[in-house]
Image 1 (spheres, rainbow, N blue to C red):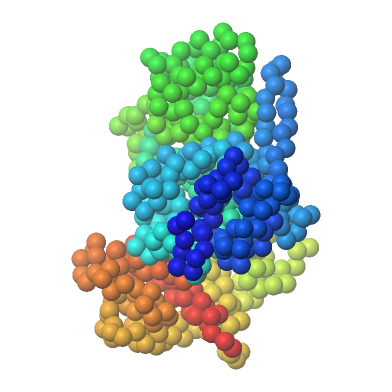
Image 2 (tube, rainbow, N blue to C red; image 1 turned 180 degrees about the vertical axis):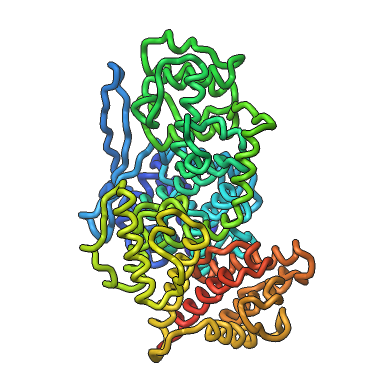
Length: 608
């Protein structure tokens, strides 16, 4: 058998090894039996553990910690099966989570298709979508890292990944740190997911993370900058600004209905479940998008499963038979139907180009106001990392009622918010919103924020500069509070303390990539990325490969260094929201968040 240097067998190869000795058992049966065996090394099976496993399988003593439970729905006279697998924890048998088998299979198919031929993991594909193998393949972080880069290209500098076929537990942790922190950076909610959860193959957490990553990739092109013709979806008297505040799934429904209306069809959709179960709306949509390949013939079929299959044959003709099956359509699986509609939009938007007139004028005016986009994106991601509710999609819109900002104050300064003063309901009137945002301003002044000229109404009105000013001070306060809790003594940490820490840490790396020290976060030598790489290598010697560091003279070389520094910081376990462009353009606020996160990480790892 192909063993590691300590004579252990990788769990990914376990099913084949068992089959050689005790044939006739499925991957999931072997995996289930293993859950009852105490393994000493994560992801590795030792000889004595392997013998115990074989004995358990032979005697049929596997307890069935993974078991399938099938529920039957009766829809329109057709029986369809909605399969869910129940996962119980070995440590706590009373804790159970469910896995939707259809979602697991389709997400595995997506991984197989998206990552096929990859130079590092291609040999591990295809993964069997009918088994639980995908969760074991995701343990070492490589497949999830590649999936993140497929959905959001260049998020991870793959040069930082540990990519050999046999990884130590420490290397697996490093990879999973990259996964978790990069997932945060593209907008995934990973509040309850740590690198250890991934290494343990925690099924419900991994499946949820995979869906979030896939969804971000599918939604990436639902953007008026990429598709100006989305302007066509504005409703009567709706402003472009109001339209752009809509979540991507709502824009997809708007697009779906735009084509149903254009086709003269009498129905509309308001969800990705009940409204599409009978495939009639899908049939009309496809015939409108590709009339030469897709007809309305399925409408003549009375059986809903047969009609769904006929519709999908039309989707196959235009290269879009993915994510759904007749069964998942009839069951109304929201996630899979949402993915299918997003795929149709991405491949066949079929919206008429804008004319060179007032339509373009309004759009151009909006795009000129886009200078706050990058900063607002980073601040929204940071707020979401605090697990605020509701999730922040569009910063200036989603903080206008004050509730998200008050939650941020409470997370940073525990027990600071008197919740009886807060209007907590959804859809507050403007008067109630301003009551909340005035309270936000009061709290800011209480904690010595610089809020000259800022009133609650400015937040409620979404005034960009003023909203960014208060959210930035919250983000900075979060870093300062973290550093304060880790530092010895009661003095508040200042920007200069962070600059001095960065200089001392960079100086400890020899030989240096950069020359000299920085005077502030405005220092222009930061743009090359070389100083930040010195800081990182000063934190952990050898983490930076000198052969991958460029001269940092040309802009492309600067960006390569910046990208490398961001991925190394995530590998070390730092939560980073800035982009390579923020380093190259020397954005002092964003660089402060980078150094502050590293400083917190450095203090946390030192014994007090």
